[in-house]
Image 1 (cartoon, rainbow, N blue to C red):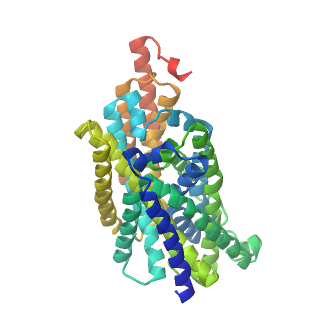
Image 2 (cartoon, rainbow, N blue to C red):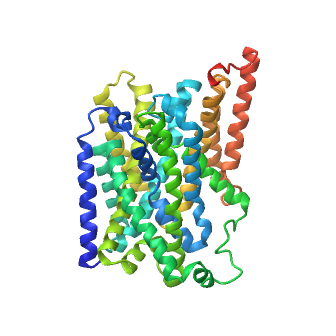
Image 3 (cartoon, rainbow, N blue to C red):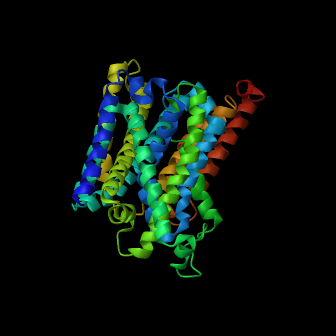
Length: 468
C-alpha cells in the first residue's frame, strides 16, 4: 500500500468508527440492543438487510467463484434478492405484527417452547457457519493490505467484529451498515464497470476465455443443482434471524415491507460488480489467490486514495456482516434458551449482559473453527449455512403464518428437529451428491402434512379462523 492508499483506508475507517461510537449512546435497553427499539424507517431497514447480507460471501466469495467457474457465481446474490422480495410480498407483515424479537419466539407460539428452543439451536449452527465465511473472506483482504500470518488475520477479524457488535448492538450494525452500504456499493460497482471496460466490453471478456467452455453458462452443473442452490438462499434468507431482525426492527409494517423491497433491488447489484472483477482478474492475473481478486483490483486498478477507501469499505462490510451474525446468535440464545429455560424472570439489564457475554464466547468459537477452513471455497459453506437455516425454519414458519392451529404442535417440533439433522447427516454421508436441501425440505413437508392430518383426526378439521 502507498501513502495515499493508507490515507483513504484510515479516513474511511475513522468515519465508520465514529458512527459506531455514536451508536453506543442509543443503547439503553435490551430491545434497543436487539431490534433498535423498533424505530427503524424503511431506509434503515433496507440498508440493514443489505448490510447484514452483503459481506465476504457476496463480494469476496462471488468474485472468488467467478474467478474459478464464471458467471454461475451470480446465483448467491440473486437468490438473496429473491428472498428479500418474498419478505416484502408476504412475510414482512405477519412477522412484524407478531412483535417478537426472534424467529423461534414466533414459531413457539404455534409449536411450543421445545420447538422454539430446537429452532434456535439450528439457527445458531447456520449463522455460526456464515460467520466463519466472513473470517475466510477477510483473511486474504487483510493479507493483501499488509502481509501477515493467516492466523493473525483471522484473529484481527474477530476482534473487529466483536468491537462493533458488543458496543452498539443493532443500532451499531444498522447505522454503520448504512454508511458501509454507500461505500461498498460505490467502490464495488465502479470496480465491476471498470473491469468490463478494461476487458473491452462483454465481447472482449467473452473472447478472452476458451470457446466451448462453461465460463458464460448460467447453469453449468445443471438446472437442478443450481436451482437447489438458489432455493437454499431464498429459504435461508427468509429464515435467518440476522436478516429478519431488520424486519422486526421496522417502526411499522410499511417500513419493514418497503425496506425489504429496497434490499431486493440492491443485493443482486453487488453480485454483478464482484462477478465482473473476478472474471477480469482471472484473465489478467490468473496466478493470484482467487479470494483476493477484489482487493488486488482495488490496489492495482483504482486511484490510490480510492483504492484505500474500497479496501476499508470491504473490511467494514466483512466486519458488519459478521457482527450481524454474532448479534443474531447472541439474541437467539439469550431470548430462546437462557430466558426460556434458565431464568424466565431475567430483566433488561441481565439480558443485555448475557447477550454481550455470549458474543464473546461465540466469537472465540468462530475464530477457532475458522482456522481449519481458510482454504475452502467460500460459497460452499455459505450455501450449506443457508440450507440448514432454510429447512429448519421456512416450512414451519410458512405453516404458522398461513394456517396457525392447523398443525399439531408436537409434529411441528419434529419437523424443526428432523429436517436440519437430515441436512447435516446427508452432507456427511453423501458429500458431493444430491443437494442436501432436497431431502431436508421433503422431510419437513412430510412431517408437517402429517401434522395437519393429526389435527384433522383430533379435532375434526383444522382451525383456520386465525389465518383468514
